[in-house]
Image (cartoon, rainbow, N blue to C red):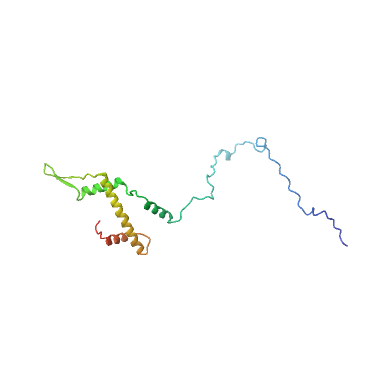
Length: 169
C-alpha cells in the first residue's frame, strides 16, 4: 500500500534557527563581576609586547652589508685612521729614528730634541700613508683573486709588496 506523503514544504528537514544571544549586562550591573582578592590579581602582569611576534627584524643577506660598507668608504674622502694615534706614531718614529736633531750642549752631552711638526704636515703625511695602504690592499686583493680565493691572506700582501719592490717595512 502506498504511503501518503504529507509535504510541509521541506520545513521538517531544516534545523531550527539558532537561539539569539542575549545582550550582556553593563559591567557595573553584572552580578558575576565582583571584585575579589585572588592571588592572580595581586601579581603584576607582564606588559604586552610592543611588536607582534610575526614581524621580524630586517636582516641583510650575508655579504650585502659588507658591499654597502665598501661603497660607503669608496665614496667618502675623510681619513680612516684616527689623527691623534697617527700623530703619536709619527712623533715617536721621528724621535727614535733618523729624524731626530742631536744637539751638543755646553756640557758636551748629546741630547735629542724631537722635531716639531706642523699640523698640515702631519695631515699630508697621513693622506699619503692612507693612499699607500689603500693601493696596497687593492693590489693584495688582485693577488687573492688571481689565487682563486676570496679571503685575503698575509702572503697576498707580501706578494703585492714584492712585485712593487717594497722589501723593508
